[in-house]
Image (cartoon, rainbow, N blue to C red; front, top):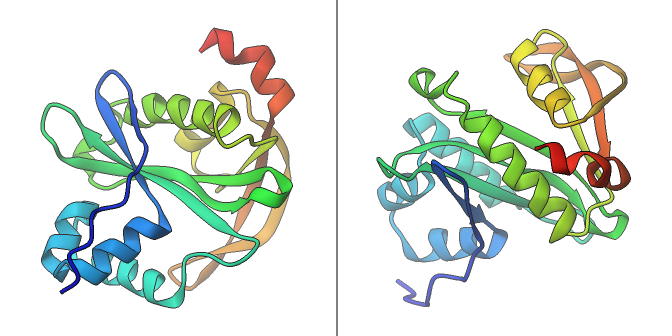
Length: 191
């Protein structure tokens, strides 16, 4: 087992959450140095099935020359429990744009405003630290909570991609939303 030091990562803080950065370098460290159970606990994977999916993503490659990610594990400060993830899973640094994605792991953590809290911190980080010009979100037109979340942060609906996303073997539509740097600058004071 290789015992190198854990890579430095960014930790964003909100009132109730620590947003711990997940980077390709951190994944390399975890999978090179820790056992499966330790990785699962570190990443907060709620089930073995979720961990296996995470492991397969890692083994197949998380980045390319033009595409990377910058994710954050959402950890409840009070309990230390990972409640979900948020981040830029399709980051095209050369174009200063990224697609934001997010999820809450367990039902008991939904409707607690965790995502509202995390979204603000991650958008600020994206525009002010990552130098993003555009943040995109692809949302199921049926996911009213998600649409409400991004619209509350100033995202504009730009269109519909038909049968864009596969879920459980079914092709679903995605509503396309975008938030530009200039729009962020004009509304961030209201957050």
